[in-house]
Length: 148
Image (cartoon, rainbow, N blue to C red; front, side, top):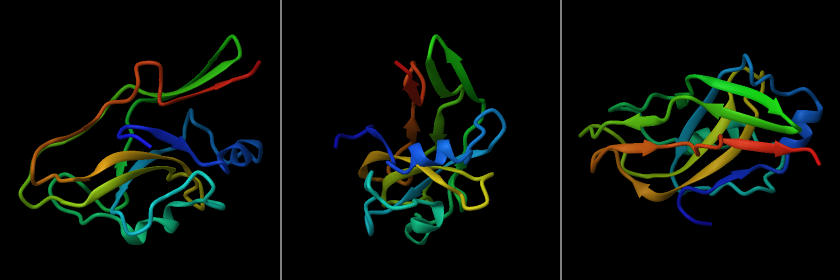
């Protein structure tokens, strides 16, 4: 897996089928964790609680529970559903920030169980103390689902 790769949890397909997400109105967050436990696509019924015990320290620009995505949209055009976010994530360099970020866990904070959707390889350790951290979503969307 390379830095910047976004990997969907296999359970995400089941979550969609059981109406676990409403991307048009739910709050999505990206929680940042250390390398104590690496997420895998095959993690069974992934939820933020499975990873939050390994969350990086708060301070600087990072808050407990992760960074809320702003401007989330869900659209379907010609059989292709696209989840996107009009804002990228930026944390300014801060001497009191974390130093041990390895993974970003994208999860649905509106869902009662905080279902995890995907994880992002940060190529860690990344450090808020060493410099700014910028996560720029793909121009084609955070994720796409194609029906063929």
